[in-house]
Length: 214
Image 1 (cartoon, rainbow, N blue to C red):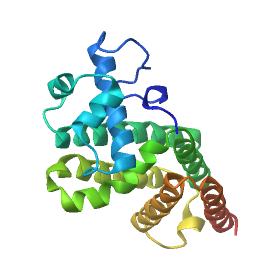
Image 2: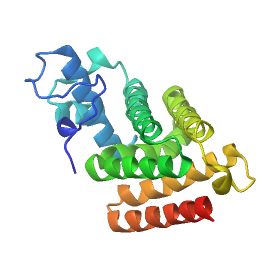
Image 3: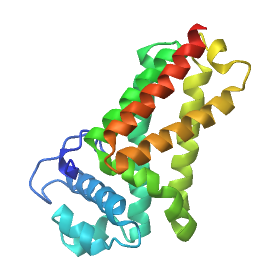
Image 4: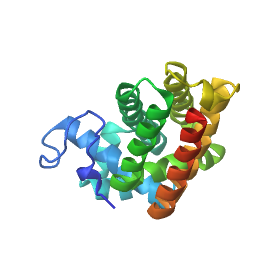
């Protein structure tokens, strides 16, 4: 697993690496990424603020300075991951206007996240179960879920050459299908089953390509 301080996408868009507590932005970034790792690996209930502080190399008092509660920290992680996926979807949109090519780019980008920062995938796949037990984190979880669906739908709506793929179906329906597929791929990545994830994603893309070129 990549350590939190090695992640390429930090909450502030900067790379970490300065000594602990010498820069408040770096410290906040490190806390968020370490919290993401602990929440992904141990779950919300199995993670304590003390665990996160220890991993981040800060005191518990310093952690509380940035985040008054574990729920506040969970919401901050949701916001950070939302930013990560905003960049992912932007790269997929910029790659090509055609829906087939955009879906290929999206799956490649998501595969990179699963391989390089699996703690992000682990966190995302656990959001639904955390939300059921802890409504206090709904602010972040619901915003992320709604934003992810919106970005997926926009990727499809603004694409070209999509009639064959949609085959008379709705753009919203295809967006929900894509989200379901990505969730399944994410669960495989979170379990470390990268070969299965790659094979499943390739099969999904084959179906899209076949529909696009029939």
